Length: 120
Image 1 (cartoon, rainbow, N blue to C red):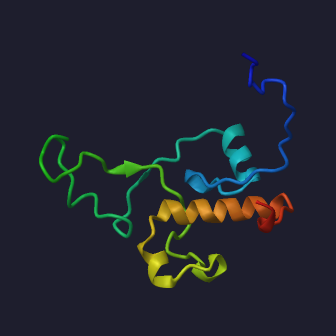
Image 2 (cartoon, one colour; image 1 turned 135 degrees about the vertical axis):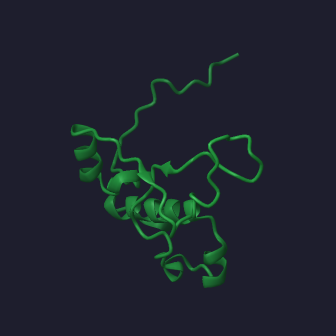
């Protein structure tokens, strides 16, 4: 049976885009964070989620969490241009913020790599 492995198939990295916690939302910001590592963990702001109201030191306590800190994206997650992606604003508001961020990162990558979305 012939092997269908593609181990020797050439590939090229044409560009990259990212969105990480601690303000690493560009390649240069990510590189700076990697060169000068620091813990970017922050206390969860009440604007995101009122962690203190649901906090309990025992993680098994029903209806509560033992988490007060997280690694958060600094950008305003509600600032999503639904029109740019031809998404109904009501549907966009109901979307998981991670889906919106992923759409934006892929779009940024396509722009940086000078690729046409129609070619996907």
